[in-house]
Image (tube, rainbow, N blue to C red; front, side, top):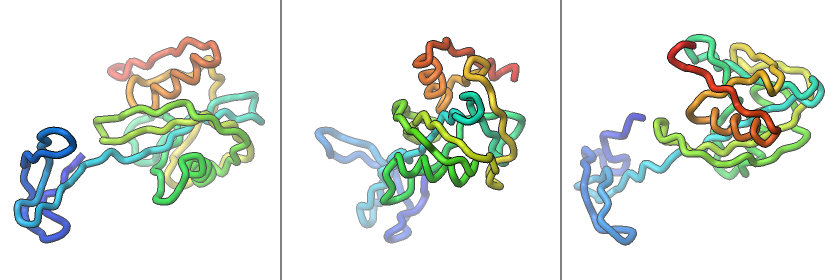
Length: 177
């Protein structure tokens, strides 16, 4: 994640500076001219384990058009301002796959520090004809017991959902795949 170099208020160069706040000294990227603070708060990202109710409960995994290789993952997207997370993941699923959500349950929240994100993950039961947005290159449908999890980010949410179904997750070896 690339941090800003200049203050958005006065255009001075930002610097790492310590200051007493929130019960202790905190070092943050700050503007020495106008005292602006870049908080670097994590970005909320929504994710869904999509179970296709009208396809024998198969799980939909998708490949983002921008990703190199043939990695398939969960459908994800950013939470928009003023949007409830449940509404946001319904919107993302509809936008990316054209599927309509019939049931939605929160799986949990995970930090993804490498990308400075907080992942809010859901299990979504959905149905309809799959029609991918240009953002996604392809998809595959797998029986839950055939899904393989990845160790970081949304892979943890997928593993938790599998465990909730009594399935011990199989893990990818990302060095070999």
